Every structure is written in structure tokens, then in C-alpha cells.
Length: 205
Length: 205
Image (cartoon, rainbow over all chains, first blue to last red; front, side):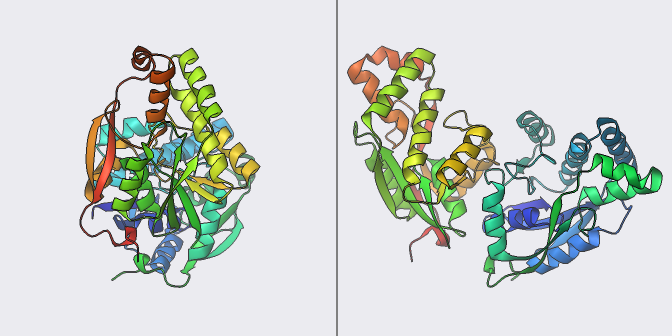
């Protein structure tokens, strides 16, 4: 089996992505961190809960600064988050040939266009796979409920290892608390805290 | 496990789609036929080769007539094939709540837009899943080669159970042989003839 790296936040989407790939690839979870907060710890805990090897990789602070500038100037986070995501894939490509994430059909960001994907795949000589891209939120929720015990909460309170947590912290520290609420609409986020029942492919041997 | 119907031609894409779903759903393969040719037999053989239950469902002749009219008037097959595909999903929805196909990220047709998918899902109260939608052709080819023994050939010579075979036959019988070559660009198609090695999830108990 080929090794695949799944960009992992600890949420139900990236967790389900790992599960769906696990019978066909040797899954390794990777969480990216700018070193601003320790939110990666929550991703590490979720990784342990679903039983895959996990590692942390670093993103540079100047990337975060560029992304935040973009988010503030746009007034919405999509382009800034996609910029970070493309950089994360690029860094992962130094170690992996197959790189996956938890992007769904109806996701807004991170979500690369077909053109961006083709360009990244040929430039970095990787295969980029989004196993949930052909699934709706409803189907993902249904499968996630069968396999995981999930904690859900508003994005501003959830402890998870996604880009948003560090972007929020950066804006809070450098700029202002209010600005966060202007650019990030509050939404429900999830974190996987345990595996349900017998999910044998997801368990380490 | 929930039952899922995979729209199945016997080619490597729909075969791989079935394999990728099989650890998570109870897979049943469905091949649609207008009753013009017996090309469904080749899909049945491929279904047997990969070890999933298979059935044939009927499409109406007047749908084929409408699709062919559209293809001839457009000068290319995309819209006609998508019309047939949407109808196939609708007929499958009478028996199944989860309906899947082998559509890839870089496919042209059949391929529904996000809007068409949302509309179909809510109108028919189904989940429509394209497990390969987040995969490129390169990644699909790589996985298919690991699991299947595949026969490849030009579309006009391949015996497989897809819509194209019957559309070609209909145009040949009703209109002219030359017209086929005008509207259908020749392309390479595949048919799965055997399962490689030990693929335990794909085999019947």
C-alpha cells in the first residue's frame, strides 16, 4: 500500500477522510501549525482516538501574516485560508506523494479550484485526493455519526487543530477581538473524541 | 451498513468506485439498459469478476430518442449523456437511498453540476455519492491497476455496459454510421475482467 498524508484538524471531515482511505492507503495524519497557539494538541488527541500515526509540520509566520492581510482586506476568510492550504500541501509534498484532506462537495474553504489542483499536482508531482469531494454534508454526517463520538460547538469556542484557530489568535493579539467577528462568521465545528464500536481498519495493528 | 447502488458500466472507474465504497456500504451494482443492444452482459461479467451483486434496470426508449436528438443538435454528447444519467439516478432512487457512480474530478460526462446534484438530492430524498470526484485520473489509474486486470480499447470497439454503446447503436440503426464519428470523439475505454490478488472486501462472504 502507498503511504498517504491526510491534512488533519481533528474534526469529523478530516477524520472521516482518513477512515475512508485507510483500507487502500497507509494513512498518516499531519497537522500544520504556525506555532501561535497549541491547538495542534487537540488534533493530536483526535489522531490518537482514531488510531493513526500523527505528526506536526510547521508553517511560516510570514505566511500567516500574508493570509491575515488578505482576510482583512477581503472581509471574508476564503482566499486567506486557501492560500494557507496550498502552502500546507506544498510542504507536505516534500515528504509525501499522496496528499489528502477532508474537503467536502459543499465546502467553501479550504477548497481549491480544478485549475489550482491540476497545477499543484503537476508542479509538485503529487496526487492530491479529497475523498469527501463527492459527498454532501448529509452523507458525511451520517457516516461520521456511525464511526465517531463527536463534540460540536461554535467555531470561536472549539478547541481544534485547524488554521482558523491560529488566525483568530493572531488577529486577536495583533489587531482586535472585534475584527475576528467581522471577518469570521460564527459556525458549528466538530472534534472527534473517540471511535465508536469496532472500526478495525482504523486501528493500529 | 447501509445499502448503496453503484451505477455500473464494467469499466475501471465504476468498478473502483464500488471497491472504495465496499468497506463502508453494502454495495449493489446496477447497469441501465434501453434494450437496444445486449452490452449490459459485459457489465454483468465485470460485476461477477469483482464479486458484487448486480442487477439490470430499464431506461425508456423515448429518453434515448430525446438524448440522441440533443447529441445530434449539440454536435457533442455531454448534455445527452447527462440527461440519461439524471434519469438513471431517478429510477435508481425508487429502490435505493444511497446512489453512487464512478465520476472522476476530471470527467466531462456524465458529470452533474453542484446545483443539479443538490436539486436531485433534495427532490428524490437520496444521497448521491461520487467516491472518485476527489481523485484525478492518474490516482484512479494507479489504484485500478493495483486491484483489477483491465482490458482497454477504443470506445467504438469496446464491449461494455455504458450509455454510449446503446447511443451509438441507435444512431447507426436510425441515422447513419458516419454521424457517430462526428459526434463521438474516439477515446480509450476500459473494462474490468478480473480482480487481482487478494481483495477481501470486494468478495462475497
